[in-house]
Length: 610
Ligand SMILES: Nc1ncnc2c1ncn2[C@@H]1O[C@H](COP(=O)(O)OP(=O)(O)OP(=O)(O)O)[C@@H](O)[C@H]1O
Image (cartoon, rainbow, N blue to C red):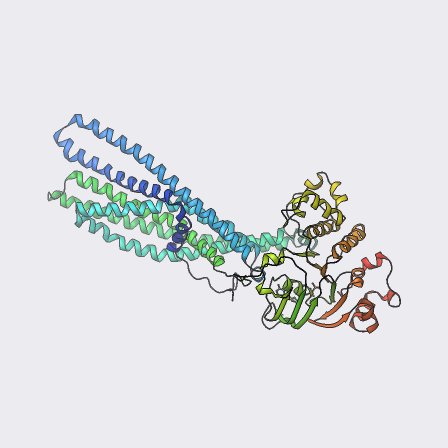
């Protein structure tokens, strides 16, 4: 079973900062050359930083007492050389780490998107689009910020820290131990705060997702907001979500504001200890003045990483929270999985059989029970029934958007779970009432999913869908932009584009799901004619379609609460005086004695009981 995801789901397994680093570096193991450059540069930077206090020590202890004026010029040259080398190696390590890190983020984002594409509709039913978008954009962006700043400093600082401690131990282990005594306190404070800071940042990221969910829901249905006069209500709801985000951020900042001064206090305590104990050792003659000056410089080298780590810690913690949310998606396994040896259909005849199928979206709310249905190749099967009877569910199951809990569904004699999904879906056509057009040109929309189609094939499909005429009258013809930023098409025009898209794929099995309800008069005839072309000689399932198409269906099934209660041709069902006749009389009271004739009548009242 797939783990529950999103709000109300199981708590995510806590990730870790190391887990995050591991994932980033695992992601970039192929870029080992860049990693080697980065490592060499980091080692070089640390060694050079070492050398600088040695110059001070040498000058104070050797040159000043001996008054060696001439050697001061050499010290200046050494300083300048060290500064230039430091610049070069710092540049090399920054660039190498950033390149490797950015590549890791790029690969992670792509992997996340690919994974999202592989997840089934059940997952999307449980998730919110805004939340998923925020994971792919904000959370991945957070990791990007880490690799472009924090990650580099943390790696360099850790290395410097280890190297400096080793040197100081060698020089004066007693003094070093005093300095190190403050570090367990720093580590304890860091551990104490980091857990809380991370939880706080997770809350801020969740609240960002809530804000983006709200934006997505409301901006994409702005017409509904306006017609319902709920602008003020929605603005208030937005304000509440934004306030939750503000408070979550403030809580995180408050923790950080306590943490940073705590670390500062501990570093001052370390400096004071070195100064006092160092002064005592110098007064006793155990240390030279030059050494104590060098020691204080090394201490700064030691404390700087600790302070910087504490500062970058918030980026690290924020990224770790983002990493948790990313891992949560990556750990979700798709329910609809393809077998290794799945059968690839050379072509689809479209023989569909449901045998004793039981299906529920939610436990204990069955939609289909012991459901049996056969679609014979080359025939048109219609399904009518009241709203919520389960008609669209049948289409979902044939497309294997969901798997039934019991019974089997076979296509051309092969059980659905044994079929290669791509070979099934690429040979199926689905035209539904909610036409989905993508941002792009008319051409791109028609050939979507059939990239090998030629220009001639595309125009032929558009002609057959009775769409060619209106397309060529658009400002840029087939190159006109449609979608959010393009020309606005009428409902009927969109419908004909989707029929052209289906025709171009020449599907072996076609599902029309309420494909022509609610159309404008102008497109009525064109659509009807296009559909007839589409249905001819093809295995088709027509759901709650308008009467004229239904009348020609080879068999009509009446579905009631997931069970077929009547089957037959239009005439047979009318004669039977049963449920179909009842629906028919309800919707065509004026035609109860005679058949409807005019297309206008057909258009005005669809067969489906609303
Ligand atoms: N993704 C889903 N998650 C949970 N329940 C669902 C989902 N989709 C549909 N249902 C429920 O399953 C039942 C059947 O829905 P279905 O969409 O198949 O009905 P329908 O006959 O096509 O209805 P309509 O004609 O109104 O589209 C309904 O009770 C509906 O609430």
